[in-house]
Length: 159
Image (cartoon, rainbow, N blue to C red; front, top):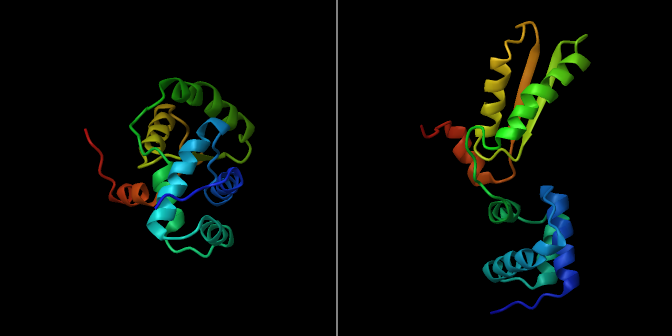
């Protein structure tokens, strides 16, 4: 059964996704969001209004996780975006360390890091910077896709 969706339904879905998962989708991606929503409605057997109300109120079991799987790209590998890592090691890390010199503590968040290669890449760069061991440096990798997080917990990576 094809679920008809109004522009208001899709906009409401876009807002829920932003609020619940922190994912932002531009106007050009609204048809993709509509397709995902139609698939989820079909699978759940709900009308759009019921489905959206459940998402908005938090009355869902594993639906948010299922949406995270459908809406995120689990592509990851070590040093994935070379220019970003170069900017981190040459600009961001030295700037943060300069700003935190008195407390000698730096906290790094690797958001959307899939199975962790990005966070480990940052750790390697920090290690290569030969920072005095008296510094307290921590790196936290997070992702909203529960399937990828389960893989991350295994800590197994290809060569």
